[in-house]
Length: 418
Image (cartoon, rainbow, N blue to C red; front, top):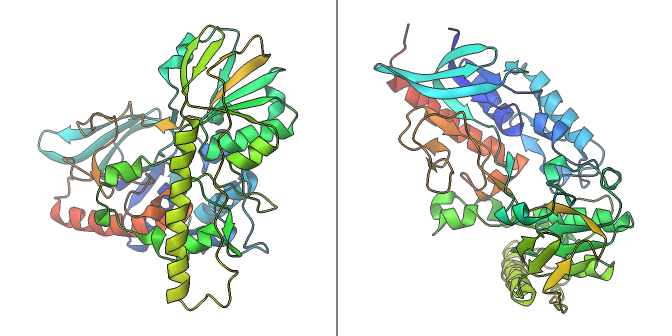
């Protein structure tokens, strides 16, 4: 079987960052990709989606945005070109159109892993899983209770409003994806209901600067996973309720409600065409309002320490959201709602990984990307993996450099199989 020192699974931004760092250390490796470079961006994103991070923050090892709009937000074709250009810039060793079918320890006293694919079997002394944290939609069991004539889909299958059947739309989930889809469908003239669960509310900009600039400036994005009291809880936190748009607008529950989107509490149950909602919108939005209050205080303190108060706009605070009265139950058919979009997040899915490294929640157990109880096995691209910025493209570089150092040490201590 062909062999390599390190095998990377996935040629998205995390896998490519890992490849560049291994290349810089002259560590032999190959990337296996089920489709093409940036495959998830090519096939599992809706047409109007933009990065929520500004272009200047789109940075990878040895590669960064060099266009004319540093404060804008890349659309999907731009992201694909950016990542393809990155792979080409250092001739990343990508073997595309290759689906991984199993990864298992070699056994028999041999170190490393056997990786079976639909194009053959590899041996590698170390393996980096960079297949992404958002691979399988986490659709609740309640969805099974809906009648078959109700069209259901997740964000990875949504492209634009024209693909949906006529009629209203129920969007379930109010983090970054849910609120963007509710806004887009409403702008397209659909009657939209948004079922609101846990979310993290932040303004798009504060005191004249982008929120991501603030998080970067204040060092919040560099917070290390070892400095967090409950890292597992931090990793489960919902995504930020901010979006990237050409007009840099803040999009939150207040703005979409003012535009005509009906809000409800968390979805509780589905029975045929009837959907029940919890009476918790006021509590949920109250919790979300407390997050920016604490964070903005930290940003103000950072501005004071940095001597920037005279250069920035005066501090302000977002208006506290006043939750409206919401329905407890809706009959989708009688209200002409023909589609439900499940923007309820994602869950891990590694059916090809045959080694006991999973926790009770199905997540790979790891210590900052170093998989526990599996020498030579690593993960990349997971939320708050090593730093808070791990969630973003901008975080892959520091994580990849750290793991490259660990891989190099592991290889020095692992005998070479001839």
